[in-house]
Amino acid sequence: MKPSCFTKSTRMIAGLLFAILAVPLIAQSTGQSRPRRSLTLGYDKAHEITLNGTIREVIPQSAPGSPVGLHLLVTGPQDTVDAHLGPYLTKDTQEALQAGTPVQIVGAMERLHGKNYLLARQLIFSGRKVTVRSENGFLVQERAPRPTRPIAENVSQVELDGGAR
Image (tube, rainbow, N blue to C red; front, side, top):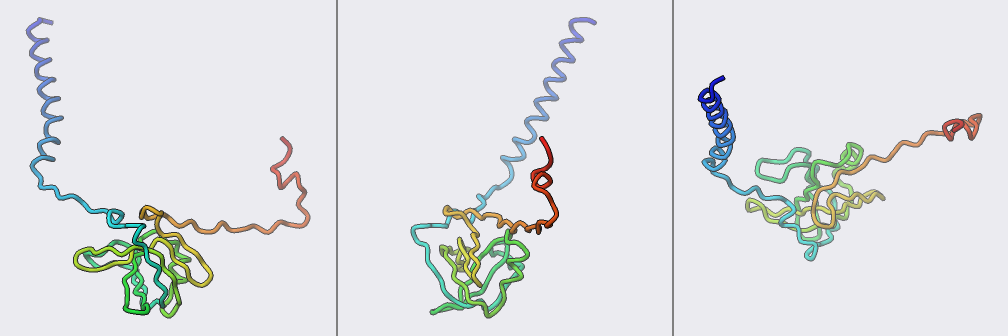
């Protein structure tokens, strides 16, 4: 192979690599980007409130422009509040939330698109305590309770322990 061919192919590969790497940079800089606002930005633990009220309505699908996930309209002592519970509650918990159920919600208010939402951190109802957000306002995934298996009376301790080791 001639040295000039090697140089020409090296330049061609370098040019191709440059083009491949430069395209994403150009595409990112030309698009108008607007910062996405996280629901944790407005969560201020120092301004948490506790709302005692009754569920007026359970809204499983959020309306356009509202925070994604389950919402409860809760009638409290002063007004009806839209409480955002997020998308991570177990099906069991969602089914247990019914209109007319008394609830206690600990959370922080946030204004989004001209409407106030109570970002629930903790939900207490029907003897259950459900953590919806961390103390910093991040949504957490609720874990379903582990089913317990009844122990058969005729099972030996060795079988329970997994056999001999």
